[in-house]
Structures are given as C-alpha cells and as structure tokens.
Amino acid sequence: MALAAMDLMQIASDDHKTDFANKLRDEQLELTRNRLDILQVNVGKLCNQACHHCHVDASPIRTEIMTRETIDHILSFLGTSDIQTVDITGGAPELIPDFRYFVEQIREQGRRVMVRCNLTVIFELGQEDLPEFYRKHEVELVCSLPCYLEENVDEQRGRGVFTKSIRALQILNEIGYGRPGTGLELDLVYNPVGASLPPPQAELEADYKEELRARYNIDFNKLYTITNMPISRFEEFLKRRGIYDSYMQTLRDNFNPHTIDNLMCRSLISVGWQGEVYDCDFNQMLDMHSFGREVKLWELTVEDLIGCDVRVRDHCFGCTAGAGSSCGGELV
Image 1 (cartoon, rainbow, N blue to C red):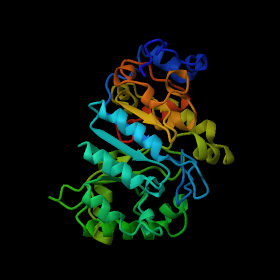
Image 2: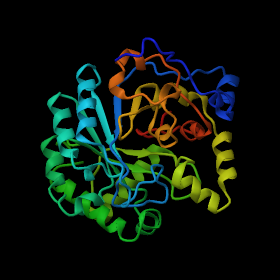
Image 3: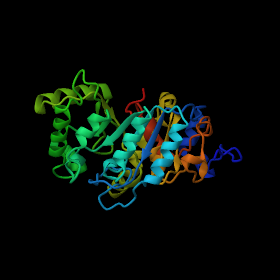
C-alpha cells in the first residue's frame, strides 16, 4: 500500500539540529534520493565473527534473523520495480536458514545479487558448498579483508581469521572467482584498523594486488576502501580509548562537499531484517527509520522512495570525509 496519505518528507526534528545538517545548509547542499538502483537487505545480525569495527554489533549470539515470510514480501516488492541489484548483507547473511532461497529467487527475477561475505563463513558446519553455490548463481562477492598482513587482520577480527580468510580466497580463486575472463566478481573491502581515514583507494588496491599475488597467489577484481563509522561497536571502541571526540573532529575537518552527489543513500534503500525501510545500513543500526516512522518495504512503491529527503545525523560525516565512503568504496 502506497503512502499517498502520509507526509513522505517528515524528518524527526532532532535531525535538523545536528552539525551535519548545519554543514549541508552552510554549503547550500541538499541530500535527497534521486533514483533507486540498489536494494540493500540486511537479513540479520547473526555472524560467526564479532569484529571490533562492526557497526551492526553482529556476533554468534545474536538471534535477529529474517524470516521466509519477510523475504517473500521483499521479493514481491522487487517484482513491481526496475531495481537491478540486490545487495545482501548481515551479520553473515549466509547463516540465515533461507539465504539460498532468497538468492535463487532474486536470480530467477533476472537481477544481480551481491553478497557481503566475511570469507570465514564457508568453513562453518554445513556451508562447505557455499563457493559452488555462489558460482552456480553468479553471485558477486564483496569480501572483508581489512589488511594483507596477518597481525592487523587478527587484531581487528579475531585470532586465526586471517589464515582462514586467505584459504577462503584461494578456494574462490580455484573455481574462477577473481580470475581474468571468468566473469565471477570477487571484490575486497578494506577498513582502517584504528581511528583514521582510509588511504587512497587506487594506491591501496595496487598494493593489495601485488602483496596477495606474491604471497598467496590470490587474484581479485576491485578493492573498496570504507571509513569506520562512529556508531555501535566502533563507537564503543573509540569511547573506551578516549578518542571518540578526536575521531569525530577528524571526520568533520575532512568534510568534502564533492562526495554528496555520489553518496549511496541517493540511489539505495536499506531494508532491515523485519522489513523496515531505512536510508542506509548505518541509519538502520541507529533505528533511524526513513520518513521518521517504522514503515515496511512492501507498504511502499518505488515512487514513494524517490525524491525523499535522506535522514542525517553526525555519523554522516563518516561517508563525506576525504574521498568519501560507501558500500562501493571511494566516492570521488
């Protein structure tokens, strides 16, 4: 059901009072969704890891999992749209019972499927055939590897994660992922270990390709650099070390107005594990519902979602600092 009777431009009053909102006004910038190319679906918070930087607060003890009923509602919405890409994230999305069903149904609709994979999930009990499942359905993989050095990865993600991640990448390479000419996309994600902005994406990608090829004979397609967002578990990490304020100041000082046109919230909608709609995955973790209220995706039309103001708070400085940051890496 469309929201024709509702004020789609309503935004909670506290959003207007934030430093980020003030910055947009000072720069005479507006932040609205001007198209809808990507449906990003967070299917839950269950994960086989508990990374220090995780903005989802995902872990092995979380119980939030998307149901088949919610998945079917999302698939019905997709069927009424021209959205070509579905970006599935979590948690470790592969751990929900209906993950494979969801992927299969999206592919049957002829749409691209991207999966945010933590790599180590393929070694979980019952997941051994995941690489072949990915290959069969031509799933595009976006995989976390915050460094090509073991010490840095294990510091952020847990002891032994690096070794498992490298072996997972080798397995994916063996079936064609990341290899030239196969069409099987394997992208990696870098995020800083500490409270700093990422280095230039192109330079770091070249380093990653050289190091991973020389050390482990690993190939991949692209590297995305993503700024750690000052929310959830990473916010707690910053505050425990007494550096939250200095990190926020770094983000503010590096605000780049040229990132605004390419922000992911301008062409993407985020859906929570119960079907609620958010302007991005970060807003989702802060319970910042689109339109300032809880609305299910299937209660909307695509037209309802285009032309709407994006809700903002000060964590948005994370996406607009330096070269910018999004689920697809640098913005400028």
